[in-house]
Structures are given as C-alpha cells and as structure tokens.
Image (tube, rainbow, N blue to C red; front, side):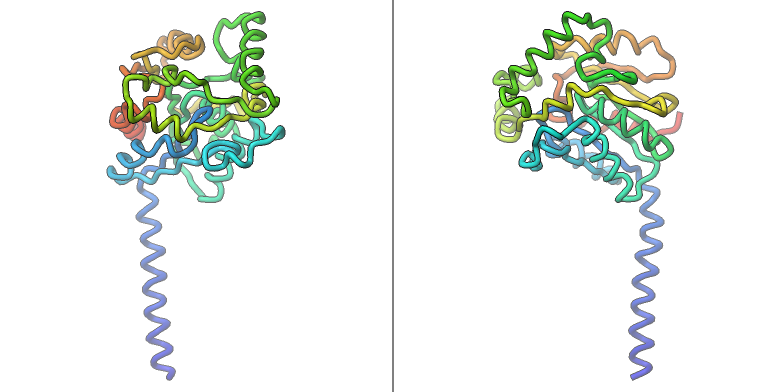
Length: 275
C-alpha cells in the first residue's frame, strides 16, 4: 500500500513538474491582447487570432461589457472606465507580462487607459485605425483639431443613435466598416454587431501615468477606403513625423482585422521583434 502511494505520489509529482516547467517554457511565447471597437466583440479578431496562434503566440480577445456576447450587460452605468477595467482584469487574472496590446477604433481609448494602469506589463501597443486620446479627452474630443461646434454636433448624432440614452444602435449602413464589397463579411457583421454603451463615448479618459507614452507604439491607418471620421487620418498625419511612433498605412477598410487579417497578424508579430 505504501509503495503504491509513493508511486502515485511520484507520478503526480512528475505531472506537476511537467506542468510547472511547461508553464515556464510557455512564458516565452508572445502574448497578444486584442481589444475590439464599438459595436463589435472579441469575435471580430477570430481570423487574426487564428494566424497568431498558428505562429505560436498566445492570444486573448476580451469582449467589453455590454458588447458582443455580453450585450445583456449593457446599462446606463457602463462607462469607459468599465471597459478599461475589463481588460485590466484579464491581464491581472491571467498574470500576463510583456503583453503586446492592440486596440481597434474606439478600442484605442481603452488600451490607452490600460497602459496607464499597467505600463510595466506592456511590451508594445498597436493602435489599429484607432483613437489616441490625451488626458481629459473623450472619444469625440480626441480627434485632432475638432472644434467645439463639431464636438456638439457629433454628440448630438450619437445621442440620436441612442434614443433610450444608453445603447447606441448599429449604423444601418455598414459601408463605414469597409466591408461593402465583401458579401459574406457584411452578412457576418450584420449578424454579430450589437448596440454600444453611449456613456463610453462621452466619458473623458483620466490618465495619471501618461497613458501609452514611453512604450513601443505603432499607429496603423486603414486607407482603402478611409473611414469618414476625421480623427484617424488626423492622427496619422500628426504621428507620422513623430520618431517615437511607428506609423504606416494599410490598403484595406476600417475593419482590417476582418478584411485583411494576414496583414494585421504580420503587423502584430513585427511588434515582437526588438528594435
């Protein structure tokens, strides 16, 4: 009986050791956390995630509160800070370090807040046709050069999309996402897009650690076609002469993770290469 117990204990020890050393070896894999934009969910990264995982990476694609499969959680209290905490909680719960963080569109607001809170855990940041806010700016006011009158008009338009004051309905015309000529992709979006919490676009971001400043950063602007929203081309124009950023364009529409997943995956993998 004792011999059997010792043998079992030895086998268990071997399993535990293998698990321990496997986890240590696994820590050398690049880790990506991909954050979706408004009306989307973690599902939109599926094609990119498949490619990154095939290249040996670990990929997490959290869905923000009130969006995607978490649409039932939408409510008047869902804020920008809620969405930042969604991603912070994933990184902390999974005990991730050296994270390669990417945000698409509105997701740029979220990842900037995540960097501000967890800067020592972030290896690189990629803004994919995304918002790049400074402290105190909202999704509306982060657009370079926006006038007060334009900001008021934009907010009025967003509130019109949310007659209940809570949920911004999906734009009826999906051409803004750059998938109009891609029938299956457009149908996929129509099935999967969900209303987005209005408050997250109206909340100013509060940064106490300079956001993503000081990290390895890239901004990728989608140009075929350009999304008819002023902030993304304006950010591209502003950042392309800043030596602290890697700036490039991608010849696809705004939802590049859907229309050009191989190119997006290659860009993300390039962020793991030192230099």
